[in-house]
Length: 356
Image (cartoon, rainbow, N blue to C red):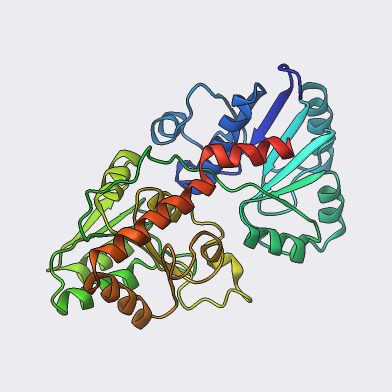
């Protein structure tokens, strides 16, 4: 057991407050380590707005500091590393690539996903200065080994579970994610198209809620035009409170991230973990998710949700749930709630204790 005065520095790689799951992951880990009596400081770049950060995320009483975002040549890295070693016992750097050099004896890379292979000599040297790598899922762990040739610990981003399974459910759908186009898109257009088809088949007692930060206004405008005339509600830049309230009363959570993506060739474009899916399961939503990436870990097909890879499959599973007895939905929702407990703070805290 470490002494109470052990100091930990955690460095976020977020450029702004819209990094979503990445910021949530860093702050959750910081809170878990603080609960173990470590003296934790979380560092963000100056480009991150402190007021927005504290209002949108659960920062609590965490020590948060802001540092300049600038090029880091080798000599500057070494100077920084020497100072860091004098002050901190443990450092954790969130990174998608080989980070800068560290000289701290206990050092961890917190990797949401390894975006590229480690090939250059400089990258290899920098990577070797870090003792451990932490992945956010088994899927990410696999690609860290493949691209970085390093084994990794897995610490799932933890979620907060309601004290009991929400029971007052309607048949609404929920899709959470940033409104952006491109290969990393959450593909809300596909979710809307499937929802409209189900409505046209006579299932008119449901709504589709789309929640997310607006990263691309033109994309949102196209989605709204696609949704015209149907019970589809856009919650642009919706708060965590709004998200929680909608999840509590909705039956289904839909994720189309990774639609038509070959995860063996473009693994960076599928969900590497999918914290919103797990949060939805914690609120008794039945998840219907693309059967790729981290989704295959969190959602057990046919037990607590369904995997789908085509629009026809999504519509088939939705119709199956809507036309079947309420017992099927209750059982599956209860199974989803139970599975989510594997990712709550108490479960993840046990794993954190083993690693730190």
